[in-house]
Image (tube, rainbow, N blue to C red):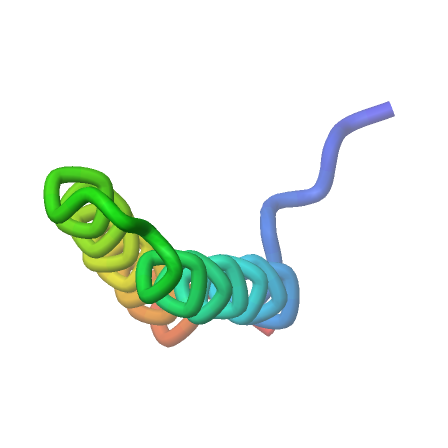
Length: 64
């Protein structure tokens, strides 16, 4: 059986999941005592948002 290519919906669902993780990581960063830990988590948030943006772009280009 052939695997179906990803759909717009699956890309958008993944993007939503990444943005949710970014929100939680941002909230967690506010509880960190060390500034280096805060910066690391905030960098991770940015990476998650960038990945979500790429998935949204892929959704815009995907078929159905």
